[in-house]
Image (cartoon, rainbow, N blue to C red; front, side, top):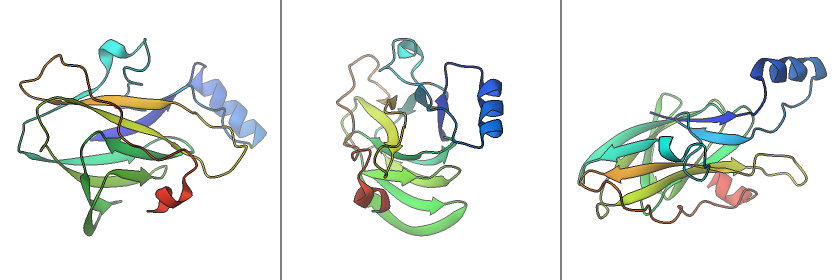
Length: 172
């Protein structure tokens, strides 16, 4: 299970109360998270970055859960395609893709084939925001896909994730 979330540098209860009282949107978060960590692009999380360990040649079922309050998220794994097989507890006709777009509260089931050379690969997510002039968290959260037998090499580059305002990619 991979949970996408967010983090604020303020008291979350106070943020919630202010949002309820104003009737407006919550303040923009300070970071997105994968399984509770912002990832190694943040100095505070570098050593605690979530690592998904895989065996070469195996296929893994991952359930993505978007618990981000208001943002649709792009999610991808560097040098890997995933196969979407379900959404919100319903099977879908499988399709292969380089990235997925997931809405708040949505779940997506994907198959990951560990079919690349044994290395470390970035898993990354960032926001999709379709409107101009809308405040949003412009950060990228990361985790590592780590093949067994490869413990300390540097990860590859970030996966190719669409631009934050790429509406065509968000519905693709």
